[in-house]
Amino acid sequence: MSAGRRRSPGPALRCNSTIAPLLLALLLAGCASRAPAPVDRDGPEAKPPPGLERVPDAEPRVEPLRRGGPNKPYEVFGRRYVPMTADAPLSETGLASWYGRKFHGRPTASGEIYDMYAMTAAHKTMPIPSYARVRNPANGREVVVRINDRGPFADGRVIDLSYTAALRLGVLRGVTPVQVQRLTHDDIRAGAGVARALPPDDPAPGEPALASPGLWLQLGAFRDRDGALWLQQRVLRDASGTVSQVAVFEEDALYRVQAGPYATRAEALDATERLRRHLGISALLVERR
Image (cartoon, rainbow, N blue to C red):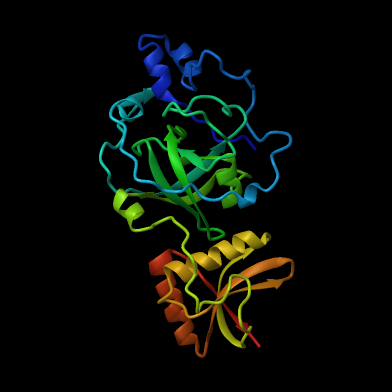
């Protein structure tokens, strides 16, 4: 697949505001005097570092919003963009892409160097710096990324992820529908996006007390155990009043995250609706005997 492409308008526009359109398009990726050797095609490196699926989320911090610079209005491919200048919420649904080795080691719109193995992303209008929660509804995975770049500029795309963020979300194969939510300073102060320890009475992740018979709600199925444990902890943390137990079952080479058990179908369906409202998770009703 071709990784999602992005441009970094800030550094380029500072270099020369009267440059011809063709040269501008070439320079929008940055104009560092010691840029890495150019790469013709984007994509992953031949041998990515091991353990990337265990790279933690970006840790949200309250950072002052930049005045001017990457938060000034800008124009790319004949379209004008006006970045947000206030600490306001933003929620979007659209396509996610990702960018890799072609931009690795080059300046982002913020002036920071792009690291395809860090948990970062590009957005057209979120204030820089920002933090955002990105969810892949197809598999229930979520990540928190730091917004430090501008893009993507293809129609329908709302965020351009680093290679590692795309890997953890399971979107490396192509553009994928996602849900994006900016974390405001109040969200960050309240602990949104920060993993918290489970209460002592909760079951340890991956070690449910009993696989009791009854009706269960399947919240996700993963090939890697870490992804299942991450979803289990998230549900226990953010929807503790919605479900009583969240278990991880290893079956058929998959790690299945399920909530339950429920005595009746009506109780299970009620919990399904509450999970949808609180977390945006679409659960599948299954029966264990």
